Length: 352
Image (cartoon, rainbow, N blue to C red; front, top):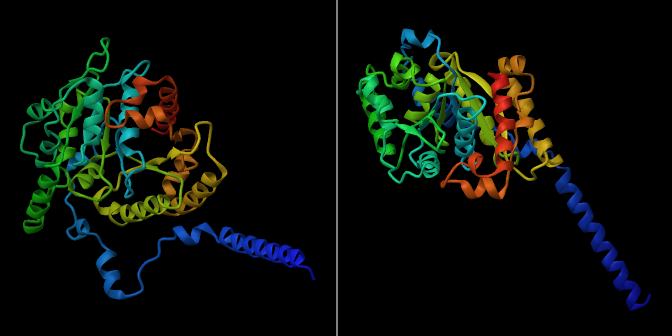
């Protein structure tokens, strides 16, 4: 056997081995990677089966059952999935023609990304904090509303958008309020935001509320969920982000019955997708797995909305949307970006 033939056979065998290895890797079920499994030891189970917010059954105020305009919380346990981008651009969409809704934006994330985005679009450099007043609950409703002055993005705007701002000290306020509640459980803090949003002063100032939450269940997140009518969950359709949406849903369902039983899942928006024209097959596969799991967790949402994953509302990864982050609202800066959120807004409106 010649050296050339031996070399050829070696190369062929190496190629076959590589193909077999690749096939084995690709053949693994992705659900095994994304599966949220509980710990095996009972000590850890006891720590995570119930969250701190479930320790004392909340005393819901009577206004919890009253009627209000839509209050949408945009949240997920996973960071970097486009929550702020979706919140700000949906706010722009709802405030513009032909909707012309009065939009109240609430930044409940201490990082203040929504505040920077909206203020940047309005040409305002003051990033002073105001959203903490909604948590503390000490201001009269009329006074509290004054901390969210109208934002004007264009000359023809009538100030349809108001913004409660957050920045880094907001985390300190949350922590202090949480400690107060732990040491004095009778001092209920979960419904402070609800009391404001249900007041005549606030309801006369807005037609829809969008709340941007951090990727954690914090004092502010609990306030948002306890006031909300609907939950919107953005997620990237990949193996790193899908588990966050599932775990977040399972956590909420554990506390939902006592803490916020009227909360409805509006849907899951695929965000930062790979191409502008539609979802790639690999993304579709991830979303199918998520749909199966969320139908089990949110059966009522599946019955009322059909598919939980809002495939037609996908938000692609584009330069215009990415470059506007923290500086302005892509809806007002780029025609193609505007069409993305017109499409997403239409789906949200239909589900509301």
